[in-house]
Image (cartoon, rainbow, N blue to C red):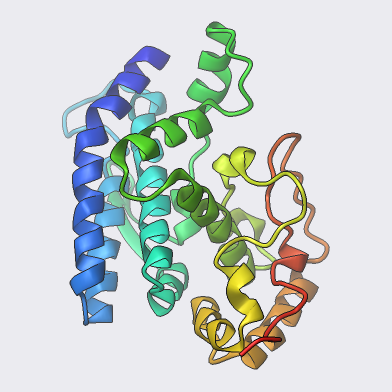
Length: 263
């Protein structure tokens, strides 16, 4: 069962790389933000809509389509990494603060936020891990590392940073609703001790802080900090146990202490 899933994921990698190269080219060339959001909306939803059988297929299991969830997660994190690399902060917030509509077979049209594209893979992280006696914290994270390095479109460090950043952004956007958050599987490869996720560490610069504030839907740093205080208050009672070995960034200390102390 897990070998079939892995084969499906591997077979799709050349197409994933082509999609990400297209996204990268569009990011560099695009001047129409709304049209670009529509382009990414269509991309994400077309992938998600494949989670289900073709018309006429009566016998199936959800696990038959688990590769779609993996690919959606891989592509979304890679797209965010590309956008961060190109400092498209306004666009990142538009994707976070966006409702996606996709059609799932037998279920009709469904509404989703970005966090709904995250999917836990029990076949990889539990079944395959146990069957092959891999003793890995996350087989999914290992595959994401392998495929990201093979594609060479963003570095794996940039991928991990984007994965962690999506968690912070969605918790900021939906502080009281943990079901809309994102779990950064590749945080197993992030720094072990307290750290500020890039590019947030650049916010020691006032100019860079005001630019990055737009990634959180804020006009400037002052506006961001006001919204951040509200988000922390709403989220403070939300228990979030990432589990041993995952280095999920601290939502309550996600900005540098010396914020905006440099020009």
